[in-house]
Image 1 (cartoon, helix red, strand yellow):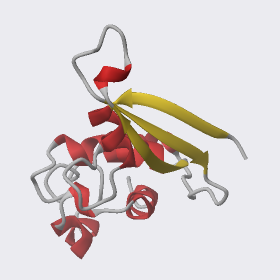
Image 2 (cartoon, one colour):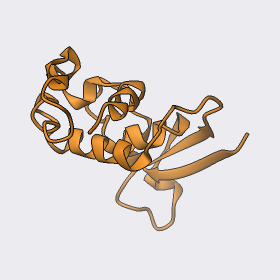
Image 3 (cartoon, helix red, strand yellow):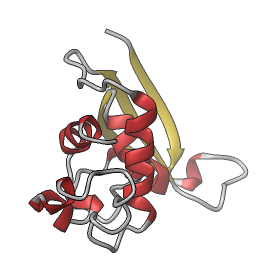
Length: 130
């Protein structure tokens, strides 16, 4: 099973690894977690480098998902995620109104904000898009 270990600026690593219902959860989190299991391993202090950078680093490990999500159309999925987080403080009904039928927008899921949805929720919604 392919594994990738990488060191990123701490804030980027935290965004990639963030679970739903977390302020750091966003486009990057969903798009990477749709294909990989993400583990935040540890922080790396700026004092470990010479010369020391002005930022802290974080190390994450990515394992390719054994059971992939049923993403039927990656283009639609990416558009949905990017559009949903484009107005992250709004209920999904507002930013997504152009992507779904009017009757679909009455579903309770559209009263939530983007960060409340799991990757599986985004995948399921992408199947209902116009």
